Image (cartoon, rainbow, N blue to C red; front, side):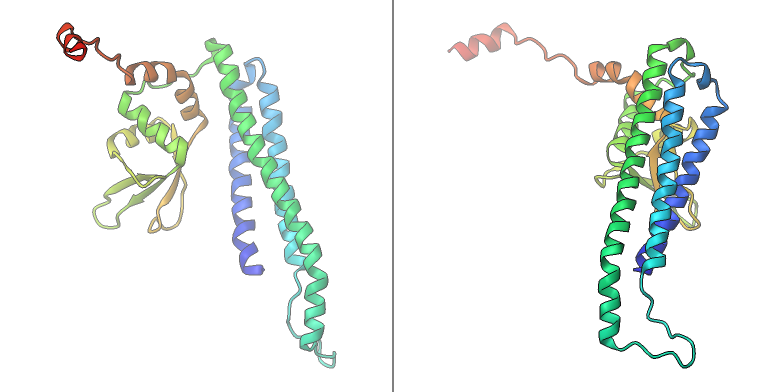
Length: 239
């Protein structure tokens, strides 16, 4: 139980820190003058609360999980039957605690989705507040769309610094459009001490905004009209 909870708690705290960072950046940005921004910021602040509650629940599971360590000198040692009873009584408490943590984490995911949707909606309804965003080519938009749909992993080789990016479905994302997406902060590469296992790549709020505002032009340009059949081919089918 402890081995399973330690990485989960650490990950929740990491995500809480990132959410606080984004909330701070938005609170100090020009987005605060956009009509409707207060609702999105409030939603993100309640997401921080839910994340902290989930971490607290997981910490409670650590505290309530029975440990088979030795007591003080002279205390009676627990036999196998006593340990079994102790574990059985704790199982129900741990089940409720973990279910509560999962509920809070689910609320976090919903809150982040609502906040991102609200930001895009507010800026779309009030384009005068729209930040300057790069106009993507078809290849750049496709790469950003692939990352948004299934995520991606980023690798940098230790020798030569060669970089490679793979989408969630295993396909390779060309490095040139990816570098432009990263340069314009449309995607985020999660920082880690070691990149041997790859680093997670996610789409930022600016990237989601680009996907939403440039979708119509990409859809129309990527679906060329089918040429009308020639008179000769039509006559051939009639025969």
